Image (cartoon, rainbow, N blue to C red; front, side, top):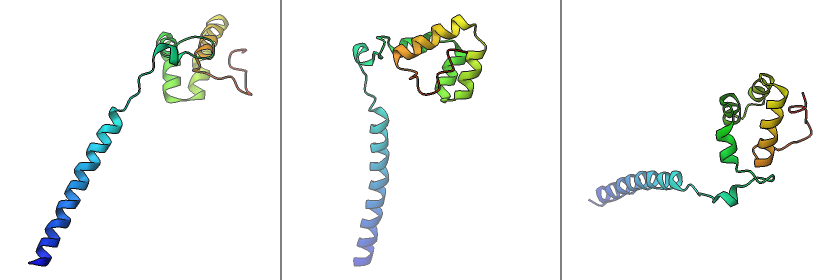
Amino acid sequence: AFETAVSDFVSKVRERAKVKRKEMDEEKSEEVVELSKEERLGPGGLDPVEVFESLPKSLQDAFDTKSIEALKEALAAMTPDERAYHMKRCEDSGLWVSGKKEGAEDS
């Protein structure tokens, strides 16, 4: 009888642990912190959300996938003026931070 009670108790604890884990995962996925527009502004005073949404689809895809190669391809397909315009806005919004390699907007 004692072993049966212990076995039942262990089963209940395991089941509760599964349920609790699911609840915790759901809570984490719901914990999206919304920032005000003022809090989102990049170093140049532009809103990164608005800038991202205004980018051509190819640039959006490059940023979504975090692919430098896709970014280079998207920029290569643009005129120099388009490229400079979009990259300047990306920098001013904080979507892109110029580093050691500053060839992307100059080419």
